[in-house]
Length: 110
Image (cartoon, rainbow, N blue to C red; front, side, top):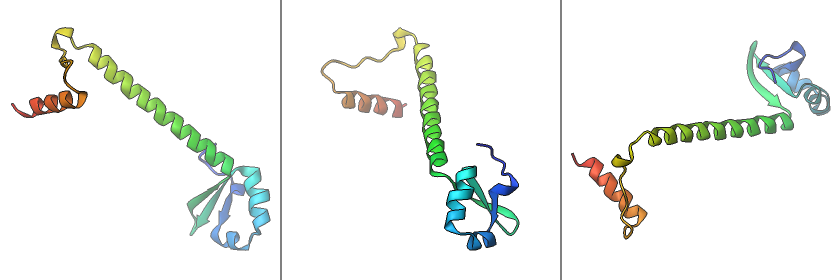
């Protein structure tokens, strides 16, 4: 979907009041998948076909997941650079929460 709007994809606020619902949904929105609403010669809002909207949401979720994967991969690569002699080990009789609390407390005190 292009960011730009063709002239026929733009509707003025006044035209929106006068156009029938069938023209709006069955003709214009069906044909273009998106409509730009113009008020005072300025593009102010967009009406999207529900399928186009769902595609945008799906793509956004996909990109958010990719971003999270890249962030985790960077963090993992950084952790792999730490020498095993610098690793902090959790004792077997300690819960994970106890270990993390102790680690946080150790980092707070100089």
